[in-house]
Image (cartoon, rainbow, N blue to C red):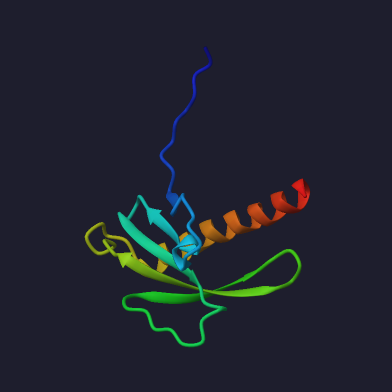
Length: 113
């Protein structure tokens, strides 16, 4: 049997697996194993008014067709200080992880359609 090098991932993608037609269906969280922190990424294009509590940053995602989506990354659980991590850096790295996933998803949906 071939040996595998199991490496711990830097981030985990989290969502509610069983969809029931509510707004919760679209919620996405990214968990940072390095900082033991949970970040929710919220697509805000459909919100007229919104306000989030806690450390946060705005991000843009441009899909393969050139449509731009507006996202907010918001710490739900921030343990950056306790783990000696910079919360701004972790937030940006988590966004990059999600952005890469969204790009992969867009590409694979197009290829399999």
